[in-house]
Amino acid sequence: MEKMIIQGGYRLVGEVSLSGAKNAALPLFAASLLVEDWITLRNVPALADIRTISRLLRMMGVKTEGESGTVRLSASGLHSFEAPYSMVKTMRASVLVLGPLVAKWKQARVSLPGGCAIGARPINLHLKGLEAMGAKVELKHGYVEASADRLKGAEIYFDISTVTGTENLMMAAALADGRTVLKNAAREPEVVELGQALKKMGAKIEGVGTDVVVIDGVEDLRPIEHTIIPDRIEAGTFMVAAGITQGNVKLLNCNLGHMEAVAAKLKEAGMEIYPEGDGVKVIGPVNIKPVDVKTLPYPGFPTDMQAQIMALMCLAGGLSVITETVFENRFMHVSEMRRMGADIRIEGKNAIVQGLAHLTGAPVMATDLRASASLVLAGLAAEGTTEVSRIYHLDRGYEKLDQKLTKLGAKIRRAQE
Image (cartoon, rainbow, N blue to C red):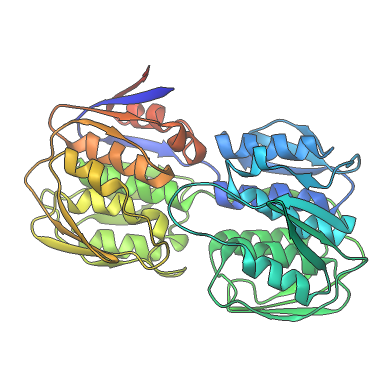
């Protein structure tokens, strides 16, 4: 395994181009199962999760060309309807093949998912939705077995907002018989991206981006070419990197419209963030101001940015309260930040952060994707050297993060543990 070695104290300056959004690309890969001809996806990031879903689709018989940049996929030779535990355990987004398989190919056998250890993320809402649409759904030996001659339109209410649940049932409903209405649907930009791609494929969908999505099923969908949106969580991570190092960074290929909650909190912390030419300028403050943050489904502050803004608040001039409402086990980075001198205490869903004048470099261990990013950010500002181990988590969701940071002036390198 590799680790990241960071020499802290260097100000980040320059331009960085953001990659395509991982969480938009994954459902689009799954959507290739809805047609029997080549679809073309552009701006696909080079990430471990993308390689995982590519391997899964190939195991099922999907032909693929390329794994990043421009990728082409064709399900014309599909011969397996199973997503095995060996694949799904490493990435819970693999469950996104469930809806397309049942809708297009009438059957699916999908392992119950794994992924980051940040709390329970059950797929019961996916299964309830498919059952409401007429699918026969059984749980056997750790697998979901689902089948239907043709799914039927239904009215489905999500007890909680679920991104993958909304995406799975949108794809299933696109080929169902009749009208499906999804209520309390997720509104994230990645959900909107999938909806727009499905409409290009010929699906009849209205209301994507609101909490009520209406899908009128069609008989067939057509292949498309589609360019994936930039990654808003990568954008937020680089914004914090500029802030925590008193930097001056321009983000290229950045959609500020997807970043309103994050940008608002970072501005409240004293940062300057504004459009400039073909990008977004981000300038870090001399003195970071404390802010209170509460994670919420979109358009609220994203849980995927909670760990990163906590790193920033460790150096703020005062007390901050960070409240996590989305996942129940997403403060695992706190103990590692304490190793760097951070003053953080946990009270239920709240992390109370007392900002300090400085952090000190230390050996730390990544526990999940976004936690690993937060430890890198803390290391950029810490005095001395920080070593972040288990960075395979980082490579699931950030494309060449160390190379991009190096280009901005960071002293960071990889080494074998």
